Length: 431
Image (tube, rainbow, N blue to C red; front, side, top):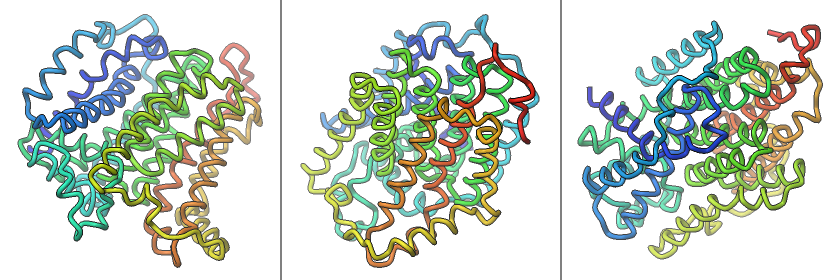
């Protein structure tokens, strides 16, 4: 029961992010997609609120965190909760997607997918933050907790601490239960953002493909309770918004907010933000928009690094995690290929790329494809640090590579012809 209350309390972040549904890129979506993206943005706003109150010395409680929710709720337009004239019909692919999410829920709640980082990093931080009612810098700086990554971005333990307020304690099972919630938000956000560009039917089919790839990857990489599900949620929203709504400033704002969330979730999130800003500047040739994309990431990550430096917590961001090892390139490439196979002959990659290989509309898919290449590049670069990174690769690459897989699925969606020009002989799905 505690886990259910924990998960239900986390849903209150929707109130914190409800104002974002006034953005036209979100307002034009159907209700499922609107609520999904508002939840993701609400996670960012709730974490920022907790960070600010820690800076001000205000202890977290239901009053200090609940009061701002009242005023944020006033900014929520009523249409967030209502059916609109552009609601997408329910399809069999939507039912299949829910079955995959139910499968992830089952695997998470019987601990088959539990991520070790939940036990060693995210859970202890969230529990301690909840007990002290603040970001506990004494706990983070304790010398025997060095391997807990004291300067790692704070969004995940802050969201878990937020949910702990309702359950009166941190719930390990509740943290696991949030994983299928993050998966649902990821898939629904992608479907909604892609709907107008490729049509409701194709968007639902590609959303099913994304759900299948991520469900398999979460199981293979044991992602439940870790930071990878929320990271992929933010990354998917950012890339999908730019791919399908990037010609509008509201789409750029949505992507910028999501990139800020990614940068505050994991170390790799900042690298993804750099990759997507660079790719957008190259493909779209809009330098001002590319700068706007980077603003939330620079503000959030910059404030966190300054906070960590002020409390002598800098570690990973001070490049203290091993020197560059060019001699390890062959070994790193081999180990990454082994992980990328997912023990099933690279099937997730084949499935993700199949629609793109069918249509071969490479130019339409240029942005997500370039982002995928850059993601693979910085992943290999990160692994080329330390004397022997084989254990590091074997325990994390199958989760880290899910970002590139997600990019390939979005590239396949971007390669679909617009609904009015669709030729059945060209766009028939190969699965």
